[in-house]
Length: 145
Figure 1 (spheres, rainbow, N blue to C red):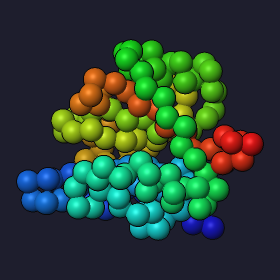
Figure 2 (cartoon, rainbow, N blue to C red; figure 1 turned 135 degrees about the vertical axis):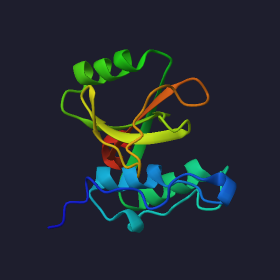
Figure 3 (cartoon, helix red, strand yellow; figure 1 turned 90 degrees about the vertical axis):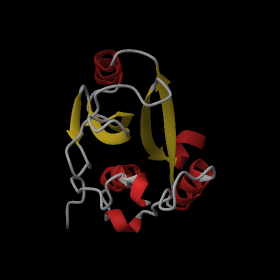
Figure 4 (spheres, rainbow, N blue to C red; figure 1 turned 180 degrees about the vertical axis):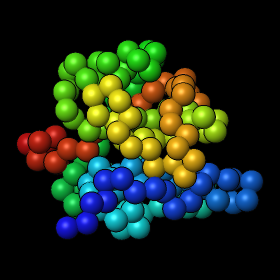
């Protein structure tokens, strides 16, 4: 079986050239251990106001839902809390990368487990809205019974 947990995104973020990064879909693919290109690039044509709905429908069809949590704390506090409250659980962490754009990585406990960025840009601060976002992919039956 192929291990897709540590693949890189296909497109770097370069909106001036009409290219929208696909780190989020790549992180989802890594979390689900599936090929990146099997996950739709919902931002392919730029920011999509229907992104959350489209992603939720795509995941629900596969039996999953994303549980999202928003934090206004230091990165060490957010990741430390995840390690303490959810030891061993993989999650997606959204923040600002070293390249200055919003970015998604896969984390476990208080460490970044995998950075799908083509430049290994990591997470250096909160997203442009001022928050860190944590997303867990869970079976829909767990979330909704």
